[in-house]
Image (cartoon, rainbow over all chains, first blue to last red):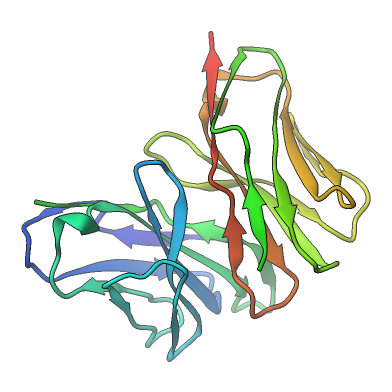
Length: 117
Length: 115
């Protein structure tokens, strides 16, 4: 059974604070993704990783940064939160897993709803 | 670059009726995968159905089926016997068979189910 976790689920924070959104998956998938989902619900890819020590920026410019030090962990950091960062952030994984299988689709976490005041 | 279009921002269906959500895509590739995802209000995005482009047979999953027209680059989702729990945002997505390519999502269709 695939599992992907995101914490916190909800976060309200003041402007200028540094925050880290956590994402972990148990499947050992090599690919992981971060999406920003706006109020209109459209998904925008902001970061992705194809493996440990591999990270790339996505289609939507973002002031956030990511790291991939372990296969199962893909945290997203905002050094200085601003109201424009208020959004829903979705983490997903796919690709080759630790059992030798392959997931063609993306498996999504429950999301983090961030509000910056 | 590939694009995915969902021309219906909102749809509604009466409970127990059938509804079809449209999706078209643009690609120059011959091998790829197509997906429909469902995102209920304030809940997790889940996969509804997957179609491999090399398969001529349309995928089905219980009440959900697709009409895959490769030449027309069309991939519609049919929901039969609609239930209140089907109310959600539905996203059509494309994935190249090229390992280095990312997924491309459509803008979504919001489906309401009327009792």
